[in-house]
Length: 168
Image (cartoon, rainbow, N blue to C red; front, top):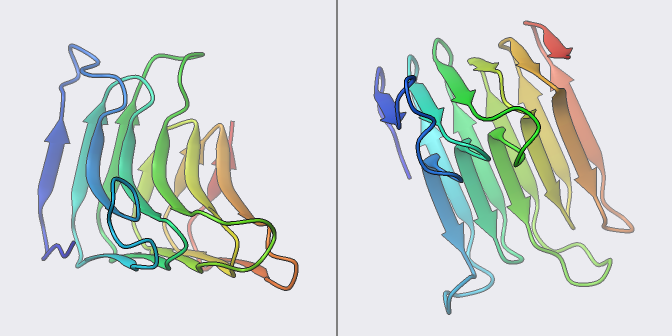
């Protein structure tokens, strides 16, 4: 999935929380018969705003069944997620590479230079390979950044290059 600059994506509206599990942008590989080792790439320029309303919703989701997941979005935009407090988990960015056992499968790389507010988890990055999260915008969420690898020889790297990450 590739975005240009200055896009607005809205799912649902602020007067009604919309459909549970709504997603602003989704890209996946490996489920429903697709090639399980395919990579997922979501890129975008600057000034992209994503507004998602619905319980358990996500601004951006990337999922690969043992392939790499890369999400790289430029500065100047905001991911806004509104859901029902205390119900299903919502995410600003959800990036996951499925893993088999504890062997490294796919790497997960998230680079986001905009703001995220206020999902349950700002950035969720998990998989069996190396996990890298780089952010320079403000993140306000119950959990700012969740980064986890289950690979025995894999590494987790989190870079906050400006902005604030606030867990509430």
